[in-house]
Amino acid sequence: QVQLVESGGGLVQAGGALRLSCAASGSIVSINSMGWYRQAPGKEREFVARIFSGGTTNYVDSVKGRFTISRDNAKNTVYLQMNSLKPEDTAVYYCTALVSWTTRNRDVYWGQGTQVTVSS
Image 1 (tube, rainbow, N blue to C red):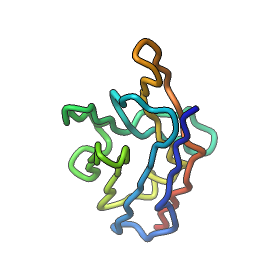
Image 2: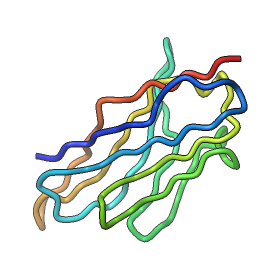
Image 3: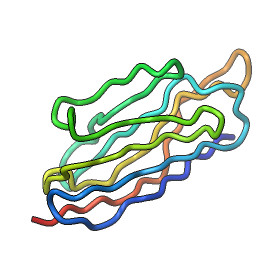
């Protein structure tokens, strides 16, 4: 089994910054990609950012220029640096990873979520 544990959420004023972390542990052969989704109250879960093992990144348009995703492959950890936060960034942020747990099998795993609240 694979576990993803997030940390770093909290309450911040608009314009402030937070850094989320997510560490993967368990039966890991390799991790293809790691990323973040978020879900605001009453809304569907949406993609935020993703980073592949080679370093390629993707972002949703609404966070480009404000959020930066990075990864420490040796620690199986992904980070999300969030700057210039806006009230509309308020959501539960979920870490996700595409993990190969054998040489033939891989699955998508999710963390438990961490709350980010941005006050105006």
